[in-house]
Structure formats: structure tokens, C-alpha cells
Length: 275
Image (cartoon, rainbow, N blue to C red; front, side, top):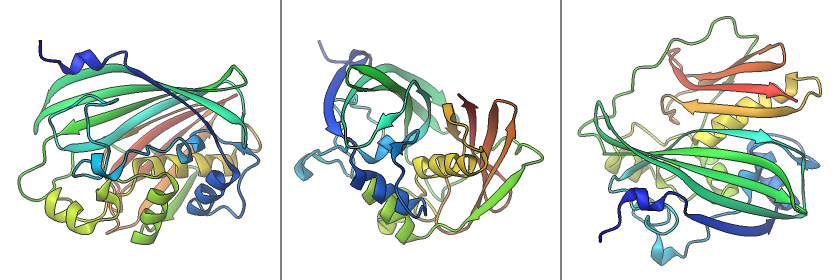
């Protein structure tokens, strides 16, 4: 019997590695920090546990070819659609850390531009047998568009941000983010592929970079309060062809955060809750 995408639900893989000071230092440099943090902030574990698939087993887009851990979705365009994370305790740097990944769901849907497949991956991080964080990533797969890229309809931006910070992405920033997270996706550094093959207007800004920058701006204003939960949803791609803004407002025991394009369209929505 031929395998179906649903057969991948429940598939797991386990790795034990060290979230090293070097991993954190490289990501700190990308995020424009003067020094790496002593402990691992939420989502900074993205700088560790790289996918070390040999070059001969990479797909056209620079990611590991599908069909091993991730299901063999027959759609060529892959994006990080969003995620959520719950922090149960601080992760220490330079300590053995166990990561257990599990495919939670594979959903096939019909979108306006054609078929879509959403894959949810749970990632559980533990140290010394204690669960420290649980993250769920949502990946979306779709067809390539015919002709020029057209932006999706964005919801209206939240009103009354307490802060707005402008970011001007460039190829150096995107390369360094790819290098710090060992992300081989060519849309972030190969302009010929991003524009000529994928049909984008420029290099694509990493969704995880935007999420991390939103968290960074919140941390600078949180007066020492630790983030216990964070969720984000990518709404529209950002490119190196124009600046974008990071916006936010602390409200009670949490915060609303979002990113806007240069013309005011929402690119990412996020929520945070303090411990």
C-alpha cells in the first residue's frame, strides 16, 4: 500500500546536543546584542540542533529532501507559517540538552491560489530529565505562483503601538541569520532562486528572524519580566527591498506584538505572556 502524508503523523526523532556559548554568540550578533546571554532566551534554541543532512540529500530549495522526518509533500514552496512556545524553566547554556521532535498533524486544504499542506511539528527540550520548553512549529507548503508575486490580504494593524522600531534588511543580515541557524533555504540568500524560480520580488526575510526581533524589543522594555509563552503567525512575507517596522504594546501580564511592511500592512502578528 502506498504511503500517504497522514502516515507521517506521530513520527519522532530525538537528538542530544549542547546549546553552546558559540551558538548564542552568533545569534546575539545577528540580533545586534553586544554579548550573548548567560541563559537561553525563548526561541534562541533555534541556533542549535542544526539539520546536518549531507549535501547529496538536499532538495532544490536547499532544505533536506522531504520524505525522511518531514512528510513528502508534493508542493515546492515551503514557508515557516508560525509557532508557539511555552517555557517551563530556564535552559542553561553549555549543558547537554535533549530535543524530541514529533509530527503532530498534516492537514491538506484548498487555498485561493491552489492546494495547501500544513505540517505541525512539536519540539520538546529537556535538560537533566526536566522539561524546559515545548514549541510547536507550523510549516506550510504551496504551489509556486504563475507570474509576479502578489501579496495576500493582511488584517488591519493593531492601533496605538507603544513602540515602533524600523529595520532595514539587507543581504548581509539575511546571510548571517541563515548561517547562525544553519538554514539552507535559498530564498534567503540566493537572489536568482528567490526571484527567478520562486517569483518573489527580492530575498525573503526569515520569519524566525522577525519573531526573534519582536521578542528582543519586548525584552528591552519588560523590566526584567520573563516571557513564559510566545506565539506568532506570519501573515505576509518581508523582503530586502524595503524596510519594515517592529511594533508592540505591553498590556497587563502580556504584550501584543506585530511587524508592518513599509506601506503599513501587517506581516506578522504575535502575543506574549509573562511568567
